[in-house]
Image 1 (cartoon, rainbow, N blue to C red):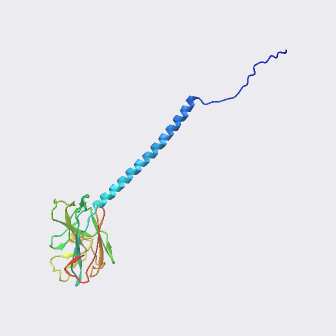
Image 2: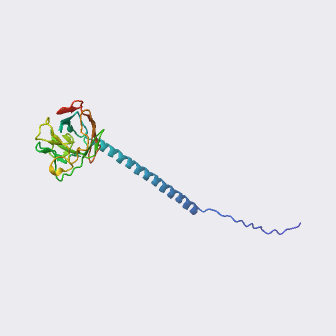
Length: 242
């Protein structure tokens, strides 16, 4: 019998493995990245939802604060020279629902003496009224206001209150009868001598019969009020524009 001296064979292998600690580190890294990503997405969604909510609330508040014209609007006529023309227009504007108050601090008043309207020195007016017809547009015309019915005595139009707003397109010479010549005067752009400084000038067109016009009241806060009316085919001293 032959004996072979067999030495143990050693096979060297280059093997690399992942330890449990390394695996844990990788998993933790994945969890952290996923958490940051999820937080970013959720934060963006929250901010977006909050922005949408603020937009909706702002829209609702603006709609609630919208003044409105509940009925017809009166208009008055007199004569510029010998031509009959519209003098001023009035409308009654309460707020809707229970919105924010509308500041109706007026730039003019009227006292039925001398020439109306009369400028209010230093008035801090927040509401603007514009006038437009087929011939011209005035972006900031003279207007005055009178609260009617129940009110608390300030210049804020609040829920449950009504104010009659008079828009002055020309100066009214109160010492001359409305049916007489020159009872209306063009504005001259100078409020220091009485009358309006922002109405129709001598170069503008008179508001005569059948004139269609638009008045827009723009408050500091809230949606504007638009009043569209037409002067009747026949002028009268006092007209009800439906």
